[in-house]
Structure formats: structure tokens, C-alpha cells
Amino acid sequence: MANLESRMNPAAVQIKPQDIFLCNTQDPRIVNLTVGEPSFSTPEHIRTAVQQALDEMPMRYTNPQGDARLTEAIANYLQQKYNLNYDPETEIISTIGVTEGAYTTLRAILCPGDEVILPTPCFTIYDPDIRLNKAQPVIMDTSKTAFKVTPASLEKMLVEHPQAKAIIFNYPNNPTGVTYDRAELTALADILRQYDIFVISDEIYSELVYDQKHVSFAEILPEQTILLNGLSKSYSMTGWRLGYICAPQKIAKHILDVHELVTTSIPAPAQVAAVEALTHGQDDSKAMKAQYQERRDVLYQGLLDLGFEIAKPQGAFYIFAKIPAGLNQDDIQLAQELSDQAKVALLPGTYFGAGGQGYLRLSYASSLEQIKLALERLKTFIDHQK
Ligand code: PLP
Image (cartoon, rainbow, N blue to C red; front, side, top):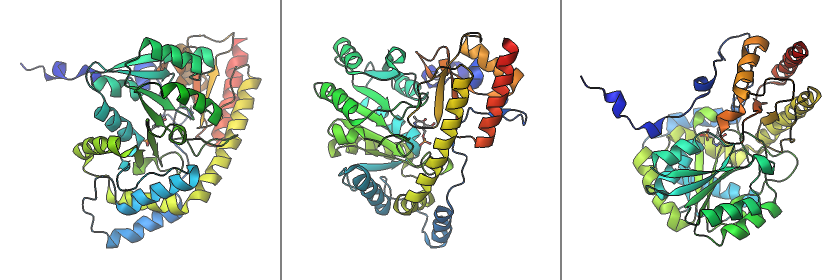
């Protein structure tokens, strides 16, 4: 009898929250702070633009990179925002979200046995994406350096792994909310420049930076950077599946080949939505950001008052909170207790890899009302432990 399941590629297995703790986020009694998904609707003018275009569009395959109007809109946006000069014809590829962008990029650059430096805690897809290519993640635990890659920690990693093919940065970071300023990025770039290493920079939260200006790695180290970004978080467009990759021409052409093999091109209606968002949507993303900032401030202060230790997140919509003394220090068990007893769902830090143990990730993409309710329930739970 064929046992075909045992013949599947084990590297394709992704750890999911339900693999490590049981929480029914569909339960209406649960306040759900697990999700990394904006709570806003896609702005009206974007929906209208797509509705109007549907009648007129041929709905055929588009250029594999994306329609010229889209790659031009991305190029203009990056030019205005960061003074970046990507050629829309040869250096920009639209993708099915950053998820596809990361997979395609790694597929295009990795050979079996290659090493990729992976600062952790980090977004959960990078590790299996690397392994699917028979390459190895070299884990760089950042928890002792305030969840940042520092020049000293980077230098050490590169001396130990001089052949590493790529390093993956994600800032503002999921799960920690940490970001980097220009001086910090410049110091890192000065080291990276000495190595033949790709810098894959996932900047999906670039529009959600609260107390400073976002600086793209591509501004500092354009020749080595493969920039990943998209519209999911900044325009509340997760379901449209819109991302893009920007890279120097000689690199982009190889990535485009893989993208074409995997997708042919991204859906035509989503491309119309992206053009509208990038050309006329600046105010939408500013308004959403203002609301996230208010939620961050409420959740941050509320958690501090409850005894959690937190570095104030500077971007994205997550708080990574160190479990205070007096509570179960096992983050997986505590997440389970909070879900069962306090009816608050959040994610254990362990889920995000080395350095996450003893932390909880709370998302403030949920509404202010839900955040306030979660804080009340956490307070009741903690008071009962005393
Ligand atoms: N990159 C990071 C760091 C994320 O946190 C997420 C989603 O949570 C993604 C990429 C996925 O982005 P997309 O919706 O564009 O695939």
C-alpha cells in the first residue's frame, strides 16, 4: 500500500501556533491579539478604482513583472519616499505579497548547502523558506542586544560564516517592533560591504514607523540589497496579495525568471488596486498609522502597569513583552493559560525562534476596544495569581 505522505518533503513543514498551543480564536468570548492583520477595510477609492476597471480590463496574463503602470507607480513611490532610483522596466517585480517575494528571492539565490544568516526572533516563514532550498539558516539570537543586529554581533557572525550567501533583515520587526535609524544601518552596511553577501530587507511595515522616519536598506547599500515590500500592512490590503521586489538589474533578472515560473504574473485586478493605492493613497496610510500609534500607546502603558518589561516598539503593530516575575515563565504554557482562563489570545515568543523564550507577542492591529478589554482581563488574571 502506498504511503505517499511519508514521501513528502519534510522541509516544507511550517510550525503553526496550533502546533504549540491550543487556542480557538474563533471562540466569540476570546479577545484575539494574535493576528498580524490590519482591522481596517481597504479604502473606498481603491475598491472603486477596481470596480470601474473590471468592465474595461481584458483580464489576461500581464507582463510577468507586473503591468507597466504598476512598476512605474512603485518606482515613483520609492523615488518620492526614499529617493531610490529603480528602473521600472528591469529592477522591479510585483509579487503575490512579500510572502511570495521572500520565497522567490531565496529560490533564485540559494543552492543546496548555502547558509543564510537569520536574526531571531523573526517572522516565521523565512526559516522554512531557506530549508526548502536545502540551505541552512544560521540563527543569530538578538535577544541580548535589545533585539537588534549590532555591528559587533554582525562582524562576529560574518567572521564565523564568511561564505554566508544572504542575511535577512526585517524592520520594523515582527515580532519585536524594533527598527533601525540611518546611523545604525550605515554602520551595518559598512561591514556588509566587505562581503559578497545579499541583504534581503523585508520592509513590509515601512509605513508603520511611529517616532522616526523609515530608512530603507536600499538607500544605504543599493548594490547588495534585495528590497521586499508590499501593501498588505500599510494600506490594509492583506487579501489583495500585493508585494514587490526591487534589486539591481543583474540580480532582478534571475529573480524574475523564478517569479515567472512560480506565478506567471500577479492577478490583474490587484494590480489596479496597487496603482491606485500607491498613487492616491498616502492619506489613507497616514490615518491608519495614527490609530495604530494610539493603540500602541494604550497597550504599552497598560502592560507596563501590569509589570511587563517592554522596549517601546517603534514600528509595526506588535508588542513583545517579557513575562513578569510571578507569572508562569514558560511562554507557551502561559499563552495557553491566558487563552483558557483570561480568554485573551496572544502568541508565545518561542513561536518566533531563538531569543523569544519568556516573551509574549501581542498585536495591536485589533481595535482599541479589544485592546482595552484584553488589558482588563490580563489585570484580573494577574491579580488572581498574587
Ligand atoms: N513579512 C513580515 C515581516 C510579516 O510580518 C508578514 C505578515 O505578517 C509578511 C511579510 C507577509 O506579507 P504579505 O501579506 O505581503 O505576504
